[in-house]
Image 1: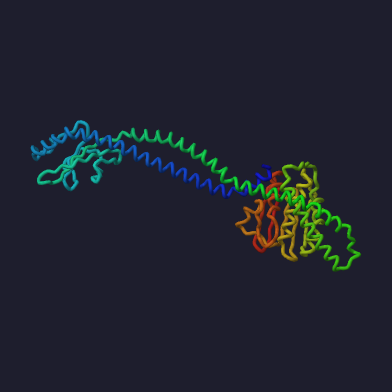
Image 2: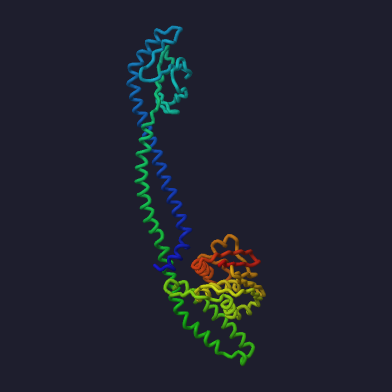
Length: 393
């Protein structure tokens, strides 16, 4: 694929690609977080299950001692039997402690075994004294080994899953972009074929118009000839833009010392008929400035700036052109550009308005040439007041 096609794809696909990748990345992380949460809960449940089994076995030797203590206990509860493996407590039917040696007193009585603030509690209900309910609670501190193991294992699993998702995303992106690339390539091929067919008739029209002696014609005929001349030059400018855009990567360009003042005056003369047709007043303030540029690129750069200033200007409007050693400025009194569209206006096929014809490639060409020569573009525009484009060298 040509460099021009790649450039077209870059700006045409970015918005769609950004939305696709954002959704894909969000879904990937959502899946990883969900799997991580499920795996964490699984390891926690497995740890509690093992602890419950261990505490249950321990309680088989501990509960007889508790029953004996209950049967023999006096007013002095200090002889409450302690378990050798776990901290223990004796709670009444209202879930209030009678005797407690627990380090963490926050207990969830709705679950037989629970983990809270780093402590595991195992609750054993006792039915005594006419089915009155009491509770024996065993406590142990969570060592956190299961949590460290879970994090380590899931990190390895997540890395593997992320690699798979990244690889899948790469192929999905290529699949996602394939129709867009094919469409842009087809459009570029159509433009190339169209520009090739335009060259001969446009050149013939312009050559024959130049040979006509207008002074020998009637005034009405002269106006018709001028309209033909304007239309032919408009097509010629469009042809030059399309040719530059489609064949830019194939053409050989040569930078040389170029007098921009002379070039601008020549291009103003070229557009003179179109300027007169809209009765636009052009004022210039041009310094003698020589830059190392390719002449074709310089012409395309200024022609597009001036062509837009004419096309989008109002009848009897104004164009101010200023050239200094630091910048080139083209200011018009035209329809202006909406603030929301200013950032997109230099993209290929992007148009400021649908009310005026065009392909939306003029300012894109300006941006390509400016980027090549490391020029900086500033644009300021207000609706119904005009647009000011400044090109910093």
